[in-house]
Length: 330
Image (cartoon, rainbow, N blue to C red):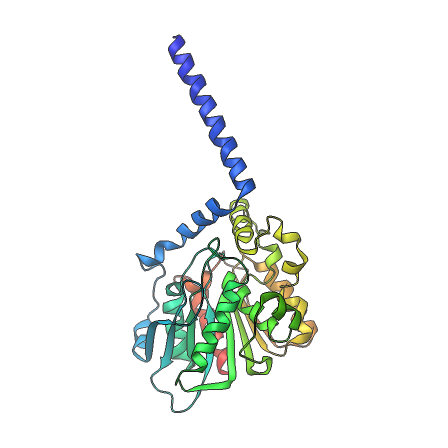
């Protein structure tokens, strides 16, 4: 039986080595975990992730979509989709959208159905922007790429009302979009991010956040320890600091800290489990205190997770969608 004892001891030693090695790796670099998180977002490339509501086909028929348009950039994933309602007689408002994915994953295709319906129902042009992902790049590359996408669209012939622009995004995409909004009036941030905005703050009329990360320093502060760990690693990969939550430059990216510089109307929604509900509430209250117009859609009676708004199996998702269309139309 000595051979069996030796095998068991060897296996135990191997297990300890694997555990210790894994612990050391996640202490030294966020790359393995962030790439694992990216893998979780890849399902949209093979399957239809969310059920389409009854009105999807009707909406799809009324919108023209130009896909995978390249915009000039030194970084990867520099392509975008443009949604244009077929029946617009004059210049229309335009929404620039940044997808979610914890900075390390996701793709514009994740929002394709939703933005198709939104373009059709709200009669607006929408630009769905792809951008490079961490850990291949780091902050603030996606913010710069949003600016590059806007610059490319400004050279286009789309019937756009350039005095009626909206910005928005879901999850981490909302943070990227909000940082771009903040940068329009913040010269210090422009210098830090090496950004020369092609838009002016006065042109932006509305901001939309769906399950948005609005306080990036609190990325890992979520009511689920596993998600918190994954977000902590993803934030490290994107911002370049293991202790990014304690960095003053990251804390200063919170939308609520810049309410006095803003004039836009805001739309916020989020679920109530494993998501950024607390951030949404804190941000909404801060903006309201400075007399900004805030529409906040939330639900207490149902258990709704992160990005609930895309899942039309939930009646709340359809209700929120109608509220969003109304917010854009008003």
